[in-house]
Length: 572
Image (cartoon, rainbow, N blue to C red):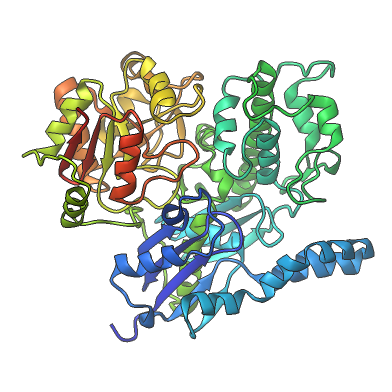
């Protein structure tokens, strides 16, 4: 309608490029570029994501009021390069080293206009402020403490603020580069033989097998004590990553120092044996991360008297950390942005642009994060006919699917619009029964093709969650780890991790009616209200986005059945 404020939010310039579309404060679509190009954590300009946002929302680009860009290039150049060089002439060399990146920042507006053929208003917003906005406005909390921790924005590695009556006030800009919890976690990920900015979740899973109170060989001190030396805390709101342990502040694609190697030994090869030493390093990093973040949040809560928390930034994808925050009972309620990584700042830019134009914008609980690509049944059937694949359309797809799940079959479940964010929440999922315990090993080795120690998440009917999990609040986005009950250990062992934790997804009918109905059908057959839910992809690939991608994954793995909308494919 004429006069409506419609904004396109963009994340570009780093990893997880994305786009989001909002009309008068209502999120209409949000898409990640990786889903179209197949390169996980894509750094490409999100032109495909932009086009799909318009298509899913039924809006023309000519209807746009504004583009909101989730990074402030002018502020970045000033604070990351010019101010340091003025204060320390030796830093001029960094300007020379990064001259191409600086040129890219200067050219960002022309790039946006050329890529989108757009001549309208463009606004630029601070990266971490976008993270805070992305979690505050959809939380539904009128008043809350807001936090963001990640690798790096313009110069900050995090931010703490207050959301109150629709306004955001920054109370701490957090530490600045190279003092970064996210980058240090990435450095440890690299040292342990995995991909930085990609496999940090693997390190989180490995940490549960380690013990941070073990002694580092030859050091006479524990892993926890070493990481306390690496990350120091000068005051309640600040932390420092001591520079003698790292090199990522000196040279691109360089991570840890000779001193780090002197203490911990050589880097693990990608295909090398995973030893107890590696597990203990992961545990030491995880323990220190939790201590630092929880101490900061406790102090901020005491200072502000706020008992609700909104989390975002890549570190907020660490569900073990989130679970520990919940267990500390500092806060009465916690909301974690489902797309807490950098993809989510596109949403934040939409909210900030809208707040500038609509001063009455208030937080409103966002239940629907299925904001990506969707396909009609006719489109799916046309594809199946083109590929000459046999299929059937059962009278009750939920009951038919539940019968296969009861038999222990592996099911690819493709429904509706794709989730926005890295978690599969029942629309782009691989599902199976959560028992026996060996189901975890089979899925890891024969379907996902990934490390054997990696855990799987349980999706549970919300009304039965407390029977299986020591849960303190709803967990609809699979971002808070909680402890399993004795019933869970007995009945759903394939979803219980080695430390008795579970990354739970609670499912309500109003949030995802089709996934809820499937869980109900499975419960009717088995008296179990839980399914093992993992993302519909294999290691190293993005979650499937289209029916064609789903079919390819189904055909190239040991998935037994594929459900596309109401359509069933079964391997013979």
